[in-house]
Length: 188
Image (cartoon, rainbow, N blue to C red; front, side, top):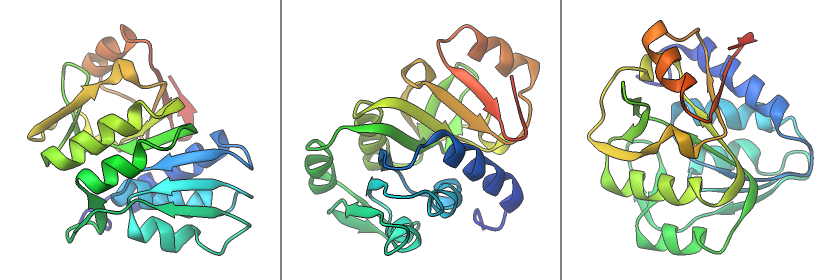
């Protein structure tokens, strides 16, 4: 259902993020519907080294344009085909990249990244700390919704990339944080 909802908005987010990532970069890439759109756009780049916990993202990037793909091990989560757990976290701890690109199940009204399971949140938290530049990809439906588990404050991110202008309440909250909000098709 999430893959079909707002597909064009997710593709726009993917295209904008792919423009930010230069050829040859090292990228840590999470999983989920929005990040699958990011992977599709990143497939057009050249010579990326990608570390991901997403089986669909591996398949979208593997064998394309000289990309090198590292799939994190762990327990496979059936709902979005991502690996999670201690094995994934242990393997991730060996990497540091130019970019970490993660999604958000929700972004709270306090500017917190949230997700649906403790294991996802723990792995995303580690991804946030494993790169020079952190990009949070979140379509407009994530803002103001709630997910069960807090990942981290958006102040840990460098950029938030979304598909629509933020409501004034969110623009104000995020405006007080050291994060730049980019809107696919424009910026704020």
